[in-house]
Image 1 (cartoon, rainbow, N blue to C red):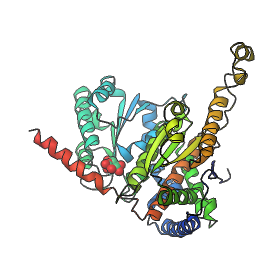
Image 2 (image 1 turned 90 degrees about the vertical axis):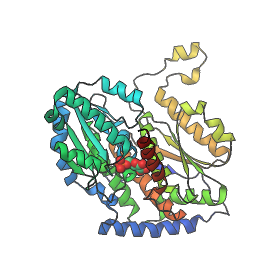
Image 3 (image 1 turned 30 degrees about the vertical axis):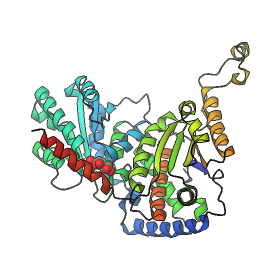
Image 4 (image 1 turned 135 degrees about the vertical axis):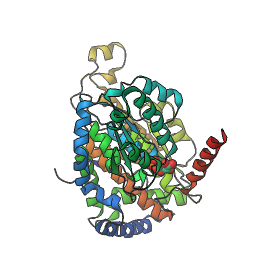
Length: 427
Ligand SMILES: O=P(O)(O)OC[C@H]1O[C@H](O)[C@H](O)[C@@H](O)[C@@H]1O
Protein backbone atom coordinates (compact mmCIF):
# COMPACT_ATOMS: atom_id res chain seq x y z
CA UNK A 1 0.00 0.00 0.00
CA UNK A 2 1.44 3.42 -0.88
CA UNK A 3 2.29 5.42 2.18
CA UNK A 4 -0.08 8.28 1.49
CA UNK A 5 -2.30 9.79 4.16
CA UNK A 6 -5.76 8.21 4.40
CA UNK A 7 -7.41 11.60 4.97
CA UNK A 8 -7.33 15.09 3.53
CA UNK A 9 -7.65 18.32 5.46
CA UNK A 10 -8.88 21.51 3.94
CA UNK A 11 -7.94 24.70 5.80
CA UNK A 12 -9.55 27.09 3.30
CA UNK A 13 -12.23 27.91 5.89
CA UNK A 14 -9.54 29.46 8.11
CA UNK A 15 -8.16 32.24 5.92
CA UNK A 16 -5.14 34.03 7.34
CA UNK A 17 -5.79 37.74 7.74
CA UNK A 18 -3.28 40.61 7.99
CA UNK A 19 -3.12 40.39 11.77
CA UNK A 20 -2.06 36.77 11.59
CA UNK A 21 1.58 35.74 11.60
CA UNK A 22 0.93 32.41 9.98
CA UNK A 23 4.14 32.20 7.98
CA UNK A 24 6.22 32.85 11.11
CA UNK A 25 4.22 30.20 12.94
CA UNK A 26 4.74 27.75 10.08
CA UNK A 27 8.47 28.45 10.15
CA UNK A 28 8.49 27.62 13.82
CA UNK A 29 6.69 24.33 13.16
CA UNK A 30 9.37 23.50 10.58
CA UNK A 31 12.03 23.88 13.26
CA UNK A 32 9.98 21.87 15.74
CA UNK A 33 9.49 19.10 13.16
CA UNK A 34 13.24 18.96 12.54
CA UNK A 35 13.78 18.65 16.29
CA UNK A 36 11.18 15.88 16.56
CA UNK A 37 12.74 14.07 13.62
CA UNK A 38 16.05 14.13 15.51
CA UNK A 39 14.31 12.81 18.60
CA UNK A 40 12.86 9.97 16.55
CA UNK A 41 16.34 9.11 15.28
CA UNK A 42 17.99 9.11 18.71
CA UNK A 43 15.04 7.70 20.64
CA UNK A 44 14.53 10.77 22.86
CA UNK A 45 10.76 10.66 22.29
CA UNK A 46 9.83 6.95 22.09
CA UNK A 47 6.28 7.78 21.04
CA UNK A 48 7.74 8.51 17.60
CA UNK A 49 9.30 5.06 17.37
CA UNK A 50 6.11 3.15 18.23
CA UNK A 51 4.71 3.05 14.66
CA UNK A 52 7.75 1.04 13.54
CA UNK A 53 7.93 -1.24 16.61
CA UNK A 54 7.13 -4.93 16.14
CA UNK A 55 8.57 -7.03 18.97
CA UNK A 56 6.25 -5.65 21.65
CA UNK A 57 3.17 -6.85 19.78
CA UNK A 58 4.77 -10.21 19.02
CA UNK A 59 5.26 -10.69 22.77
CA UNK A 60 1.53 -10.18 23.31
CA UNK A 61 0.44 -12.59 20.62
CA UNK A 62 0.27 -15.77 22.78
CA UNK A 63 -1.93 -14.28 25.50
CA UNK A 64 -4.09 -12.48 22.94
CA UNK A 65 -4.63 -15.69 20.98
CA UNK A 66 -5.43 -17.62 24.18
CA UNK A 67 -7.90 -15.06 25.48
CA UNK A 68 -9.59 -14.67 22.10
CA UNK A 69 -10.22 -18.37 22.12
CA UNK A 70 -11.08 -18.99 25.78
CA UNK A 71 -12.70 -15.84 27.09
CA UNK A 72 -16.32 -14.79 26.98
CA UNK A 73 -15.61 -11.40 28.56
CA UNK A 74 -12.51 -9.26 29.02
CA UNK A 75 -12.47 -6.35 31.44
CA UNK A 76 -9.92 -3.69 30.57
CA UNK A 77 -9.42 -1.79 33.82
CA UNK A 78 -7.81 1.61 33.36
CA UNK A 79 -8.75 5.28 33.09
CA UNK A 80 -7.69 8.32 31.05
CA UNK A 81 -4.73 7.49 28.85
CA UNK A 82 -4.89 3.90 30.02
CA UNK A 83 -8.35 3.40 28.56
CA UNK A 84 -9.51 6.06 26.09
CA UNK A 85 -7.22 5.00 23.23
CA UNK A 86 -8.31 1.38 23.58
CA UNK A 87 -11.94 2.48 23.61
CA UNK A 88 -11.42 4.47 20.42
CA UNK A 89 -9.75 1.56 18.62
CA UNK A 90 -12.36 -0.94 19.77
CA UNK A 91 -15.01 1.08 17.96
CA UNK A 92 -13.49 -0.35 14.78
CA UNK A 93 -14.26 -3.90 15.77
CA UNK A 94 -15.85 -5.97 13.06
CA UNK A 95 -19.40 -6.76 14.26
CA UNK A 96 -18.85 -10.32 13.02
CA UNK A 97 -15.70 -10.77 15.12
CA UNK A 98 -16.01 -13.89 17.24
CA UNK A 99 -13.64 -12.83 20.01
CA UNK A 100 -14.73 -12.03 23.59
CA UNK A 101 -16.92 -9.14 24.66
CA UNK A 102 -14.59 -6.38 25.80
CA UNK A 103 -15.62 -3.99 28.55
CA UNK A 104 -13.78 -0.79 29.46
CA UNK A 105 -15.33 0.27 32.77
CA UNK A 106 -13.11 3.30 33.28
CA UNK A 107 -15.42 5.13 35.65
CA UNK A 108 -16.11 4.20 39.27
CA UNK A 109 -19.80 4.93 39.36
CA UNK A 110 -20.83 2.13 41.72
CA UNK A 111 -24.12 1.45 39.98
CA UNK A 112 -22.79 0.99 36.45
CA UNK A 113 -19.78 -0.95 37.73
CA UNK A 114 -21.95 -3.30 39.71
CA UNK A 115 -24.32 -3.83 36.79
CA UNK A 116 -21.38 -4.93 34.70
CA UNK A 117 -19.79 -7.14 37.32
CA UNK A 118 -22.98 -8.85 38.42
CA UNK A 119 -23.57 -10.20 34.94
CA UNK A 120 -20.18 -11.90 34.56
CA UNK A 121 -19.30 -15.56 34.55
CA UNK A 122 -15.91 -15.52 36.31
CA UNK A 123 -14.59 -18.68 34.69
CA UNK A 124 -14.88 -17.11 31.25
CA UNK A 125 -13.71 -13.65 32.32
CA UNK A 126 -10.21 -12.24 31.84
CA UNK A 127 -8.81 -9.08 33.41
CA UNK A 128 -6.38 -6.63 31.86
CA UNK A 129 -5.34 -3.96 34.38
CA UNK A 130 -3.57 -0.99 32.79
CA UNK A 131 -1.98 1.92 34.59
CA UNK A 132 1.22 3.72 33.71
CA UNK A 133 1.84 4.84 37.28
CA UNK A 134 0.36 1.64 38.69
CA UNK A 135 -1.24 3.71 41.42
CA UNK A 136 -4.31 5.35 39.92
CA UNK A 137 -6.98 5.08 42.56
CA UNK A 138 -9.89 4.17 40.27
CA UNK A 139 -8.01 1.33 38.62
CA UNK A 140 -6.59 -0.08 41.84
CA UNK A 141 -10.00 0.10 43.55
CA UNK A 142 -11.75 -1.68 40.67
CA UNK A 143 -9.11 -4.38 40.54
CA UNK A 144 -9.18 -5.06 44.28
CA UNK A 145 -12.98 -5.36 44.25
CA UNK A 146 -12.95 -7.70 41.29
CA UNK A 147 -10.14 -9.87 42.61
CA UNK A 148 -12.18 -10.41 45.77
CA UNK A 149 -15.23 -11.47 43.80
CA UNK A 150 -13.30 -13.62 41.40
CA UNK A 151 -11.28 -15.37 44.07
CA UNK A 152 -14.40 -16.15 46.03
CA UNK A 153 -15.92 -17.68 42.90
CA UNK A 154 -13.03 -19.61 41.33
CA UNK A 155 -10.13 -19.55 43.80
CA UNK A 156 -6.82 -17.70 43.88
CA UNK A 157 -4.84 -19.73 41.34
CA UNK A 158 -7.51 -19.56 38.67
CA UNK A 159 -7.93 -15.87 39.37
CA UNK A 160 -4.20 -15.23 38.97
CA UNK A 161 -4.23 -17.15 35.68
CA UNK A 162 -6.88 -14.76 34.35
CA UNK A 163 -5.13 -11.46 35.09
CA UNK A 164 -2.57 -9.55 33.02
CA UNK A 165 -1.07 -6.24 34.13
CA UNK A 166 0.46 -3.40 32.13
CA UNK A 167 2.34 -0.85 34.29
CA UNK A 168 5.66 0.93 34.28
CA UNK A 169 8.43 -0.76 36.26
CA UNK A 170 8.59 0.13 39.94
CA UNK A 171 7.00 -0.67 43.23
CA UNK A 172 3.51 0.65 42.56
CA UNK A 173 0.35 -0.89 44.04
CA UNK A 174 -0.48 -2.53 40.72
CA UNK A 175 3.00 -4.02 40.43
CA UNK A 176 2.73 -5.28 44.00
CA UNK A 177 -0.60 -6.95 43.25
CA UNK A 178 0.92 -8.50 40.13
CA UNK A 179 3.89 -9.84 42.13
CA UNK A 180 1.66 -11.10 44.88
CA UNK A 181 -0.49 -13.07 42.49
CA UNK A 182 2.41 -13.99 40.23
CA UNK A 183 0.66 -12.74 37.10
CA UNK A 184 1.95 -12.03 33.63
CA UNK A 185 3.06 -8.39 33.45
CA UNK A 186 4.06 -6.18 30.54
CA UNK A 187 6.02 -2.94 30.88
CA UNK A 188 4.46 0.43 30.16
CA UNK A 189 7.28 2.56 28.79
CA UNK A 190 7.92 5.24 31.47
CA UNK A 191 8.82 7.68 28.69
CA UNK A 192 5.50 7.38 26.87
CA UNK A 193 2.81 9.43 28.63
CA UNK A 194 -0.63 7.91 29.00
CA UNK A 195 -2.39 10.18 26.50
CA UNK A 196 0.38 9.43 23.98
CA UNK A 197 0.35 5.66 24.61
CA UNK A 198 -2.39 4.44 22.30
CA UNK A 199 0.11 3.06 19.77
CA UNK A 200 1.84 1.04 22.49
CA UNK A 201 0.49 -2.16 23.96
CA UNK A 202 -1.77 0.02 26.15
CA UNK A 203 -4.05 0.73 23.23
CA UNK A 204 -3.09 -2.11 20.96
CA UNK A 205 -3.51 -5.10 23.29
CA UNK A 206 -7.22 -4.38 23.85
CA UNK A 207 -7.53 -3.67 20.11
CA UNK A 208 -5.93 -7.02 19.26
CA UNK A 209 -8.23 -8.77 21.73
CA UNK A 210 -11.08 -7.29 19.71
CA UNK A 211 -9.59 -8.46 16.42
CA UNK A 212 -8.67 -4.91 15.32
CA UNK A 213 -5.61 -4.86 13.06
CA UNK A 214 -2.92 -3.34 15.30
CA UNK A 215 -0.29 -3.41 12.55
CA UNK A 216 -2.57 -1.36 10.31
CA UNK A 217 -3.10 1.17 13.12
CA UNK A 218 0.66 1.60 13.35
CA UNK A 219 1.00 1.74 9.57
CA UNK A 220 -1.40 4.69 9.45
CA UNK A 221 0.59 6.45 12.18
CA UNK A 222 3.85 5.73 10.35
CA UNK A 223 2.49 7.32 7.16
CA UNK A 224 1.82 10.56 9.05
CA UNK A 225 5.33 10.69 10.51
CA UNK A 226 6.91 9.84 7.19
CA UNK A 227 5.13 12.72 5.46
CA UNK A 228 5.82 15.12 8.31
CA UNK A 229 9.53 14.30 8.45
CA UNK A 230 10.11 14.28 4.68
CA UNK A 231 11.21 17.92 4.81
CA UNK A 232 8.34 19.40 2.77
CA UNK A 233 6.65 22.77 3.16
CA UNK A 234 4.93 22.77 6.57
CA UNK A 235 1.83 24.31 4.95
CA UNK A 236 1.34 20.90 3.29
CA UNK A 237 1.77 18.94 6.52
CA UNK A 238 -1.65 18.67 8.19
CA UNK A 239 -0.32 18.63 11.77
CA UNK A 240 1.93 21.65 11.18
CA UNK A 241 -0.73 23.64 9.37
CA UNK A 242 -3.32 22.70 12.00
CA UNK A 243 -1.03 23.89 14.79
CA UNK A 244 -0.19 27.15 13.00
CA UNK A 245 -3.85 27.86 12.24
CA UNK A 246 -4.92 27.17 15.82
CA UNK A 247 -2.10 29.24 17.33
CA UNK A 248 -2.89 32.19 15.04
CA UNK A 249 -6.58 32.05 15.93
CA UNK A 250 -5.78 31.84 19.64
CA UNK A 251 -3.35 34.76 19.50
CA UNK A 252 -5.23 37.16 17.31
CA UNK A 253 -8.89 36.17 17.25
CA UNK A 254 -9.86 35.13 20.74
CA UNK A 255 -10.36 31.47 19.87
CA UNK A 256 -10.33 29.37 23.02
CA UNK A 257 -12.29 26.26 22.02
CA UNK A 258 -11.65 23.54 19.48
CA UNK A 259 -14.77 21.71 18.38
CA UNK A 260 -14.42 18.35 16.69
CA UNK A 261 -17.70 17.90 14.82
CA UNK A 262 -17.57 14.26 13.73
CA UNK A 263 -20.09 12.76 11.33
CA UNK A 264 -19.00 9.18 11.99
CA UNK A 265 -20.41 7.43 15.06
CA UNK A 266 -17.45 5.05 15.19
CA UNK A 267 -15.20 8.04 15.82
CA UNK A 268 -17.08 9.29 18.89
CA UNK A 269 -14.63 7.54 21.24
CA UNK A 270 -11.78 8.89 19.16
CA UNK A 271 -13.26 12.27 20.06
CA UNK A 272 -13.08 11.42 23.76
CA UNK A 273 -9.48 10.29 23.41
CA UNK A 274 -8.66 13.53 21.57
CA UNK A 275 -10.26 15.60 24.36
CA UNK A 276 -7.78 14.25 26.89
CA UNK A 277 -4.89 14.80 24.48
CA UNK A 278 -5.74 18.45 23.84
CA UNK A 279 -7.07 19.26 27.30
CA UNK A 280 -4.18 17.90 29.36
CA UNK A 281 -1.41 18.70 26.90
CA UNK A 282 -2.21 22.36 26.31
CA UNK A 283 -4.17 23.50 29.35
CA UNK A 284 -1.55 25.04 31.57
CA UNK A 285 -0.23 28.40 32.81
CA UNK A 286 -3.48 30.13 31.93
CA UNK A 287 -3.23 28.94 28.30
CA UNK A 288 -5.39 26.30 26.68
CA UNK A 289 -7.81 25.24 24.04
CA UNK A 290 -10.98 23.69 25.46
CA UNK A 291 -11.70 20.58 23.37
CA UNK A 292 -15.36 20.01 22.59
CA UNK A 293 -16.71 16.96 20.86
CA UNK A 294 -19.91 17.20 18.85
CA UNK A 295 -21.59 14.42 16.93
CA UNK A 296 -23.14 15.06 13.56
CA UNK A 297 -25.90 15.01 12.57
CA UNK A 298 -27.27 14.83 16.14
CA UNK A 299 -25.62 18.03 17.35
CA UNK A 300 -26.87 20.02 14.37
CA UNK A 301 -30.11 19.90 16.30
CA UNK A 302 -28.49 20.83 19.57
CA UNK A 303 -25.22 22.77 19.28
CA UNK A 304 -24.97 24.18 15.76
CA UNK A 305 -26.96 27.33 16.56
CA UNK A 306 -24.29 28.17 19.16
CA UNK A 307 -21.42 27.48 16.77
CA UNK A 308 -22.98 29.59 13.99
CA UNK A 309 -24.37 32.45 15.99
CA UNK A 310 -22.77 32.41 19.43
CA UNK A 311 -19.42 33.79 20.60
CA UNK A 312 -16.64 33.81 18.02
CA UNK A 313 -14.35 31.75 20.21
CA UNK A 314 -14.37 28.42 18.37
CA UNK A 315 -12.39 26.61 15.73
CA UNK A 316 -14.59 23.88 14.30
CA UNK A 317 -13.23 20.81 12.53
CA UNK A 318 -15.91 18.98 10.59
CA UNK A 319 -15.02 15.32 10.05
CA UNK A 320 -16.89 14.25 6.94
CA UNK A 321 -17.71 10.56 6.51
CA UNK A 322 -16.17 8.57 3.67
CA UNK A 323 -18.42 7.68 0.75
CA UNK A 324 -20.77 4.89 1.77
CA UNK A 325 -19.88 1.58 0.14
CA UNK A 326 -22.85 -0.24 -1.43
CA UNK A 327 -25.65 1.25 0.70
CA UNK A 328 -27.99 -1.37 2.08
CA UNK A 329 -31.09 0.79 1.86
CA UNK A 330 -32.32 3.57 -0.32
CA UNK A 331 -35.53 5.50 0.00
CA UNK A 332 -38.01 4.38 -2.63
CA UNK A 333 -38.83 7.13 -5.17
CA UNK A 334 -42.58 6.41 -4.91
CA UNK A 335 -42.49 6.89 -1.13
CA UNK A 336 -40.44 10.08 -1.45
CA UNK A 337 -42.86 11.51 -4.03
CA UNK A 338 -45.94 10.50 -2.08
CA UNK A 339 -44.80 12.27 1.09
CA UNK A 340 -43.37 15.37 -0.54
CA UNK A 341 -39.72 14.65 0.13
CA UNK A 342 -38.45 14.23 -3.44
CA UNK A 343 -34.95 15.27 -2.42
CA UNK A 344 -34.77 11.94 -0.56
CA UNK A 345 -35.72 9.92 -3.63
CA UNK A 346 -33.23 7.09 -4.13
CA UNK A 347 -31.02 8.41 -1.32
CA UNK A 348 -29.37 6.40 1.43
CA UNK A 349 -28.59 7.46 4.99
CA UNK A 350 -24.97 7.71 3.85
CA UNK A 351 -26.02 10.29 1.23
CA UNK A 352 -27.94 12.18 3.91
CA UNK A 353 -25.21 12.33 6.56
CA UNK A 354 -22.58 13.27 3.95
CA UNK A 355 -24.80 16.11 2.68
CA UNK A 356 -25.36 17.28 6.25
CA UNK A 357 -21.63 17.35 7.01
CA UNK A 358 -20.99 19.42 3.89
CA UNK A 359 -23.87 21.74 4.72
CA UNK A 360 -22.61 22.31 8.26
CA UNK A 361 -19.10 23.13 7.04
CA UNK A 362 -20.40 25.46 4.32
CA UNK A 363 -22.74 27.31 6.64
CA UNK A 364 -19.98 27.81 9.24
CA UNK A 365 -17.62 29.14 6.56
CA UNK A 366 -20.33 31.42 5.18
CA UNK A 367 -20.71 32.92 8.66
CA UNK A 368 -16.97 33.54 8.83
CA UNK A 369 -16.48 30.95 11.56
CA UNK A 370 -13.01 29.34 11.39
CA UNK A 371 -13.66 25.88 9.96
CA UNK A 372 -11.46 22.97 8.97
CA UNK A 373 -12.86 20.17 6.79
CA UNK A 374 -11.44 16.72 7.22
CA UNK A 375 -12.33 14.01 4.74
CA UNK A 376 -11.60 10.34 5.38
CA UNK A 377 -10.82 7.69 2.77
CA UNK A 378 -12.33 5.02 5.03
CA UNK A 379 -13.07 4.37 8.68
CA UNK A 380 -10.60 1.60 9.38
CA UNK A 381 -7.56 0.74 11.47
CA UNK A 382 -5.08 2.49 9.19
CA UNK A 383 -7.14 5.67 9.10
CA UNK A 384 -7.58 5.90 12.85
CA UNK A 385 -3.86 5.27 13.36
CA UNK A 386 -3.17 8.17 11.04
CA UNK A 387 -5.76 10.41 12.71
CA UNK A 388 -4.26 9.65 16.10
CA UNK A 389 -0.68 10.36 15.10
CA UNK A 390 -1.80 13.51 13.29
CA UNK A 391 -3.58 14.68 16.45
CA UNK A 392 -0.59 13.88 18.68
CA UNK A 393 1.85 15.61 16.36
CA UNK A 394 -0.39 18.65 15.97
CA UNK A 395 -0.77 18.90 19.76
CA UNK A 396 3.00 18.71 20.31
CA UNK A 397 3.59 21.37 17.62
CA UNK A 398 0.87 23.62 19.01
CA UNK A 399 2.35 23.28 22.51
CA UNK A 400 5.65 24.45 21.04
CA UNK A 401 3.95 27.48 19.50
CA UNK A 402 2.20 28.25 22.78
CA UNK A 403 5.37 27.61 24.80
CA UNK A 404 3.84 25.01 27.12
CA UNK A 405 5.08 21.52 27.95
CA UNK A 406 2.70 19.03 26.28
CA UNK A 407 3.87 16.07 28.32
CA UNK A 408 3.00 16.96 31.90
CA UNK A 409 -0.25 17.54 33.81
CA UNK A 410 0.84 18.99 37.15
CA UNK A 411 -2.49 20.56 38.06
CA UNK A 412 -4.43 17.30 38.41
CA UNK A 413 -2.19 16.02 41.21
CA UNK A 414 -3.79 18.19 43.89
CA UNK A 415 -7.19 16.54 43.45
CA UNK A 416 -5.63 13.08 43.69
CA UNK A 417 -3.98 13.96 46.99
CA UNK A 418 -7.24 15.36 48.35
CA UNK A 419 -9.16 12.26 47.23
CA UNK A 420 -6.83 10.07 49.25
CA UNK A 421 -7.14 12.41 52.23
CA UNK A 422 -10.94 12.40 52.11
CA UNK A 423 -10.98 8.60 51.86
CA UNK A 424 -8.61 8.29 54.81
CA UNK A 425 -10.77 10.69 56.83
CA UNK A 426 -13.78 8.40 56.42
CA UNK A 427 -12.31 6.42 59.33
O1 LIG B 1 -2.10 5.34 33.49
P1 LIG B 1 -2.32 5.89 34.82
O2 LIG B 1 -1.05 6.13 35.58
O3 LIG B 1 -3.27 5.03 35.63
O4 LIG B 1 -2.99 7.29 34.67
C1 LIG B 1 -4.28 7.47 34.16
C2 LIG B 1 -4.56 8.93 34.00
O5 LIG B 1 -4.47 9.50 35.28
C3 LIG B 1 -4.31 10.87 35.41
O6 LIG B 1 -5.01 11.50 36.35
C4 LIG B 1 -3.65 11.69 34.40
O7 LIG B 1 -4.12 13.01 34.45
C5 LIG B 1 -3.84 11.12 33.04
O8 LIG B 1 -2.95 11.75 32.16
C6 LIG B 1 -3.62 9.62 33.02
O9 LIG B 1 -3.81 9.13 31.72
